[in-house]
Length: 93
Image 1: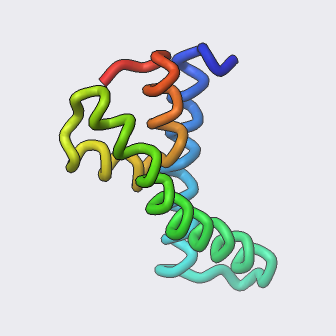
Image 2: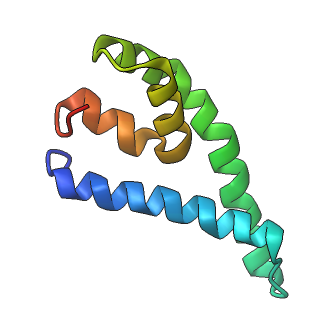
C-alpha cells in the first residue's frame, strides 16, 4: 500500500482535513468537551509535528531539486504524507 500513489493522496487530504478540523475548533469551538479535546490534540500535534518534520524533508526536497519554499509549504501542510512518498519515489515533484 505504501507504493500506491492514491493512498498518499488520500492521506494528504486527511492532513488538510486535520488542519481544517482543528482550526475550526479555534474559530467556532464545539460545546462538546470531548470534541474540544480532540480538536486541540490534533492542532497541537500538527503545529508541533509538521515543523519538526522539516529536519527530514528539507534534505529530501534539496535532493529532489525542489525549492525551499515548496518544501517548507508542503511539509507544513501535508507533513510526512508528502515527503515520505516523494522519498520512496511513489509521487513525483
